[in-house]
Image (cartoon, rainbow, N blue to C red; front, side, top):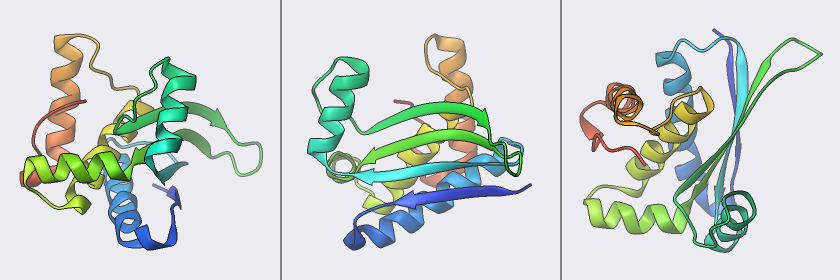
Length: 148
């Protein structure tokens, strides 16, 4: 399958962007997603607070936001799955608390966000279990098995 991942990040976050890109592609492959593309943005706390306030009515800096699109581009016929925004400072704190690398946390959050773009959710115990299983399968032994 043709999967394209656009990464947007501040230059000093390049190693984190590599981890995000790898996680996004692994998720698309694992979920057998059709031809398409998505965008992963690594963002700071102020912008994440602004986005969270605007789209969820909560002014806190959350760890990850997903904005599903699912449109089909006229030229090329690729599906645009949407955007995943990952907050690096929040991810850094969570990685420290969990005792793993920042890259691993960025991967976890990216997988979680991409699963949301693909229709997964954790609105009820059954869907949360399904999403958690997919997340664990994609991340393997480094997964905490949690959903956000």
